[in-house]
Image (cartoon, rainbow, N blue to C red; front, top):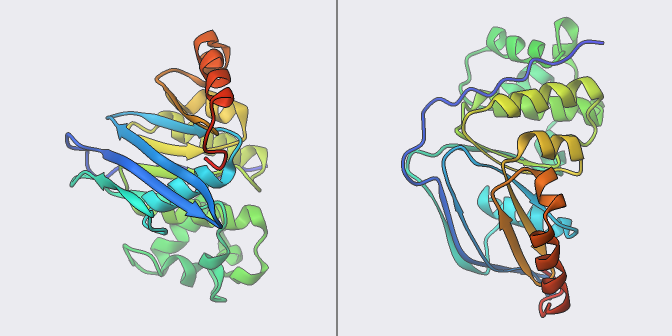
Length: 243
């Protein structure tokens, strides 16, 4: 079995400000999904958002990606920041029935068929595979297309919402290794324990009673008696069960 060639190369380094989030609130169907959420992201941080409420994590990333408006609060990206986003649900990106070369050429830098074929080849779509139509793609093939699209951006902030869903082991390993080696900022969610443990150097947990934020690996986080005690305290004092 072959592995895709996944490499994210940031085009420019960050400046002093990466991302500042202040008092972010979002209510969905009458439930407070995010409430007064604050976050300051520093250089080189790879932040895993964890917790049982998948909607809260997805909503946060959608807001930061500009795909959803918050009800209140604000967020500010630094002027040197370029970001790219991998959504949990990608069907909207494949709504037009194009072949894969046409599909990838929708996105900058628009350098023609041979350039698109090169990128698709890295993601295991070589030869006739590059002319496959998007309406016949499997879930894993769509994910590999989305990764190719992200690689084109040369962004210095990567955002992923459950990127390992639908991928085979070879593709997960290739993506995992790429993110371990990536030198800039990553904001992500994943249910893959090894993936989170090996990539993240900061954990932000969204609990029903508030946020727990620690600069440490995921294994250290899970083993921390301080974190476990705080989680118990937040759960017993919760006032916003939708968070």
